[in-house]
Image 1 (tube, rainbow, N blue to C red):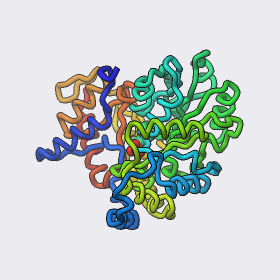
Image 2: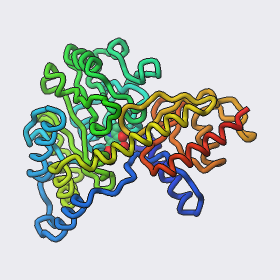
Image 3: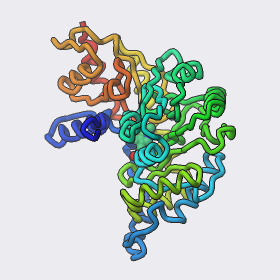
Image 4: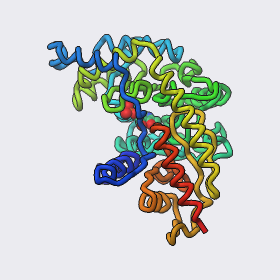
Length: 393
Ligand SMILES: Cc1ncc(COP(=O)(O)O)c(C=O)c1O
């Protein structure tokens, strides 16, 4: 089973760009899914202080520091309007680990999980690892890459256990409206379908878009939800590895047992840093959001200037997801790409620009470009793509 697991394509693209850079190449990497900002100083200071405290040198409860679980519950009420108790929070080694724990806890072999595509590359692999059966439902530009109740209903079977719902979305930047959330939540509730709501990009929405948590919006779901979240994107803390899952107390207790046998507690230093992060204000993310918004508009505008490329305006997260099918089958500096994967290969070889091809997200024909990099690098990288693709015959 492990032998069948695909490596994370996004991490692979990022690693390749970093290796080329280390070898002295002038690479612009659009692969990384992480803010280019350092972690805010007050959070780093809390971690430094934590290192000096012997209490943090020892094992702590596998499910997380009690005060962090409390703080996450308080933050969830503040940011999402969802009222949960500390025993409904499990602190995990990043959001990715929360997703794996949720699948392992709730999916029995053969259970189907509906995953709208384009999807974050981890979902189907992680579900399949525990015997879950990913049912991929394609979406496209026509619905702004958002899944509709009609499509969900067409995919539902007697074995449907769960829906994977992510808003804002990686890789498309799509953000669901209240009407759409209402309809999807009502559909899930009516059919006893669990919803795993991935809210890791909750604070990164633009142009007045509302931030909405599906479980908070849909009380009819009762206990049949899991929220996944973490400090990675909101506080520029991808490397600290702190996330969490929120669910009913019995689900959390079972997932905590699992965690106690596999990883034990998340590093106490990182948990103390996360405690400072979630207990504090949202000033740092407001600053990052402003920078991302500017870069979002620049990248979106520049991509649409390329003949053969069309890009919807992303309303959240920090990715553009342009359609590049207009460049396939054309000669680019003597090379012809028949897929977005081949086109991405031409981009890295010819102009040293790293993008993640849509194949990684179950959506061939697209590129994912992160705009979480410096303004100058961003313009330089997209300009290189503009020049390269201007040569397409
Ligand atoms: C949609 C989505 N969910 C969850 C994660 C997990 O983040 P982490 O494991 O770094 O907390 C990511 C990271 O890229 C993501 O894009």
